[in-house]
Image (cartoon, rainbow, N blue to C red):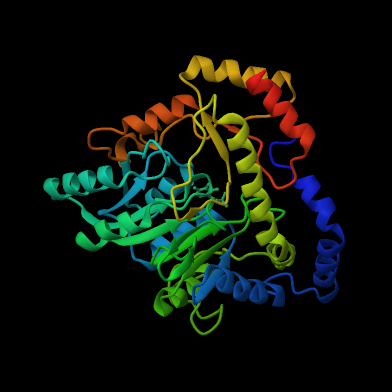
Length: 375
Ligand SMILES: *Cc1c(COP(=O)(O)O)cnc(C)c1O
């Protein structure tokens, strides 16, 4: 059994992906070829935003978002402590300071109450400019944007959505379904192979409805280009998505809605089989998860390793996302601030473990998981 079975997915899509890649090899426009534009249009349509701008990876996507917002030295960005390193790394990379926010014990996403506490703590100190909230759609579940938006409006902060794991997730509102990638003034995603929508290498994208941000990001992505790439009007980076990766993503995006249903079926199966004995992940009403991870909690760290060992014996791979909170990372000791700690994040880091999650889990797979966890 695979933790994320990219081979099964490729077998399913092989004919179509091979043909798309061959088409790129035939036309030879490896950089910013027609597939890149085609993909950007389809991504914008799917997410429901005006602009989708692809780039080299999800970390660059965050950096590009921060650069477009002119966030830098002396600025604070509020980031969840329980996330992948890149969220906070991008903030530090542009020389701003991440302030770490505790997790909600049920959703594992940024806790809105702690967010407000931390905003007030930074304000009271009066040394740094509060600029933005970077919310992360952890494990595929959109952060609690209705609450976060109220706080952002109250303190005049912008929202950046890190949807690296969240692509495909959504919140149902009175106006319809709002998809992940549309909750920030600027939102980002990653196409790292293991993400819900992955390519066969590195890739990422930035989403926005704001024309000025879109123009800036298109410029920063290609050496700060002005009229063309030899007219350089700002210091940028080299962060384009390869045409071959765009071609692969076009075929994967075509089956993505179907795969999203399958991922949700896997989660429902796990829930039905495991909820009597384990603390299973809960999706709040009106939320849709893209299930980047299916994550359980053990009672404590010793029991976690016992359970994981038992799963390994039954041939079921598991992983820990994440064993270290951001405020516990040595590199953030001086750049990052925590204002009173993140106790729930710490508890999660000690107890979480993730089960195999992908659209192609078969009955043998479920049987192995169940016999290890319930046997
Ligand atoms: C994967 C990930 C990123 C970074 O994406 P890359 O494409 O690997 O650079 C950023 N934030 C979160 C939450 C992620 O899971």
